[in-house]
Length: 307
Length: 326
Image (cartoon, rainbow over all chains, first blue to last red):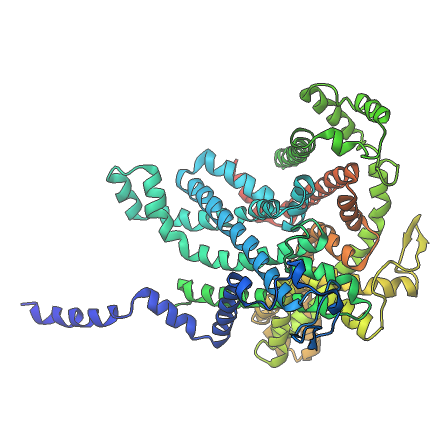
């Protein structure tokens, strides 16, 4: 008797399902032109960084390709050998465009590696704290609180003052600075999810703690984490640049954008602005692009803002 | 309240001790203290002499007590570069940093609050939107980059202000300060704005959110109904009510300003503690580094403690939450 009344919703359901959640999120994301520009810029920068050795006019750290005759040329001037330096050269006759792409590569390697490691550690800590609660929760969150009460730059400076310079040390410092943010974010959403029935059901099935935590709880805490991670990559790039600018970050042989800016700093006052300013512009564009993408992601992934 | 106070004090002490142990482990256990604490240019005889005096020839746990004892007396060894006690070298630079940080704090309020109120009153106009866009840039761009751009624009291209250094100072209450003469002020404007930008972005957001909230309250409607001018409503009724969170948050941020001063001081060659730290790292002047770290950690723990205390006095909810957990 209820055949007729049931059929319409059944008919409608497949139509709604035609758009998968992922696709809906992507369409949602594309609704903001600003965020799309940010995404395009971000992709171009990542590709440029990955393929740096093949697309740059010269290898800025291969001394045989440098000509000291070309030192301190302003942007757009022609080299001794007839090629154009679109962004000028530095005092060693290095093409700034190539140096910037290599610098971007270094900045991105450090920031992305550090963010992924911090994400993994923070996630494990946050889930553990939320899942077990009690003493373990108190202990982990005390450490998180203690660390977050100091500014990131200060913690990083302290670590690098003790550890010394080096790419690996900068990454370690960034991981230690950042894991606490992720731990706090994950714990927040995991505390809510833990109360849900599916977790009780998974436990009731006799699944182990680790399996419940990482296969059932973790996937449901991911959306806010993705947003935090995107914004934190921008923060990591900025922090690494600051540390390298201060001279405690990456070594001179593997400069990032921050170190390029620092190297050009002494020539700023004598009018050779391009050595410092163009790496600075690259840094600015990278950070703004990532933030635009992160902002839009937050809006898309936040259920409260869903239409 | 007394129990809470004592427990909080205990936590603060624990934080300081934890830091001291970490620094000890970093310097003594991971690195080689002989290399770290003794000037590399010292002769072999001086080395042995210093090693014996500092107890570096004794086992690690004994060294820890010597280190801890010295710490309690504020003795961090002698600076290699200046030849004076490391702590006194730092304390000499403290006034310059404090002056810069306080000036920046004032700037952040004086410029940030009006901008935030404007953005809050007219959130959908071009002006309001550009203020918010500016505050996002203030948040996300690295501090040193903003500083460099300021030097490029105001010192190199326009030539209005000096690019770095502290300029002339005046004796005031036994300290040398910059703000009492024109040359000193000129030198301080750029670094102070640079240091203030990040906090200004924060103040703008707080003031904007506060203004939007306050404008919807009944007492604003009442003030309007009484026939008060728009000017008076904003300047008296709105401003008064948004200042409470702004001032509280900024008190909290003083510590982070001292930390961020490391960057600003390096960019503008301002002779404060932060620049001393970077110089010391580059010159491997380790006693100064250790002394700076301990001092800044102590300052931070102290500020956090005072703020927590202030909160529990000002905000009844914090007190109640404390009582609830006990």
